[in-house]
Length: 568
Image 1: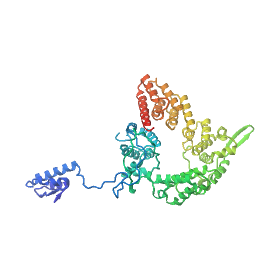
Image 2: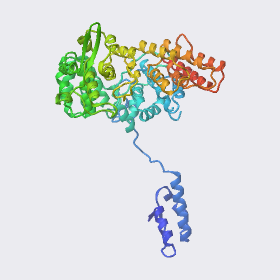
Image 3: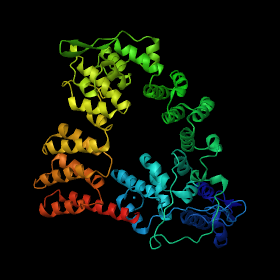
Image 4: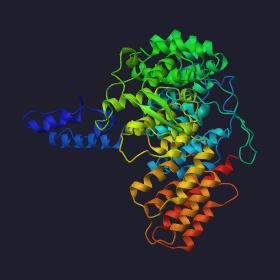
């Protein structure tokens, strides 16, 4: 009779004197030691058996023999032999680059990768991918784990996995789901000197079909559209639109009904590539889609489509509520409260439900109607440039509503000319509006060309009060933090100058502290000016309680430099 630990507990509870328990066999690894038990003394035998089972349980389990192992990367599991498809042609990151990556992403690359380092880690992985590198083998499990935990890292991790990393991802469901959800990026091979990347001598091999990595699937293979992951299908449709916009539209239309709402919205947005009048009928039909996200994408694309019937309807509604009047030499905009929207207006996206109780129903309708018009339509209607239109006075106290509408339109339509004009005139008054109707300057500035954004941020910083409170500091920090990195010299020099002005202060104000948080990632690591040395000099020249932050930022810049030098 084979006994478990629970059987022994039951026997001990009843008592072996009342109900003897012959022990002839034990569960698990303890079974081989059953011969040492004293069968002449039932109580002693039971206690010894309990001890054996307890030790066996604490020791773990005996590994099974003849367990089926997964095929090696690139090995056909069916035949167990190498096949004739080449492995990764891109070079791997060097040990020095891997060390810099782990030091920068300490909490992400466990046990050696803080939530705050995710952007820095993403920057370096993007640089590696752009330079044609893939992650080295020791990095792969940690990168995959980091991408599962942090959504923002998923695209950049997927871009540096290579064939081996995608093969590895196929052996864990959470890794594979993460890889399937991001678009495929093709890594371009590059030549690396022998001292940093020795030539491989491993023979070519093939990944078995069951775990075939997305990167190895041909973008020209129609099977990708039918059976590929969401990321692969998105990439396939984008490539098809680039090749033949009409064929891409037909492909999406034929498969439209079987897609989920979020998939339809994501795929519909791909039609922005090669957008033309041929797409109008399909986009107009999408205005009736049951998924709100699909309707939003359709409206945005129809607004971008010159001469669309949607734009004509939007313009007709807008000219009924906003007109330009000339009174002698003076030009004025006159805005009027619109009537309640009819069914056609609601279909076109005019929503009578207010996003905030602080906004009147008439003001909210006016904002939506003006924002729905293609911005180029206002320059045609009024015969003026965006800067001239934005500077016009608006009667009846409707300046805030009209400018809010143009701000929303400038962001949605990515018009940097209108963004510049609206930023130049500033806020028309001090009224408070919900972000849904009055987007911050930061969002407008995001539509500007990179050089203009950097120049604007540098100007804001030069005029900022270093001791200002949170309300004044936060917009400046937010706008600088939203800029692409590394910063151009115009902004980088302005940041170092501001830190230099703050260095003698015994207590670090909020603005310089915010700049230091951004400087480790934003200051260029390479180039004509050594910003790491500049920060170190400030720390040495003005020893204060906050100088460790300067040194930490300088150290991070040096690590970035080491990494970038390895992938040049």
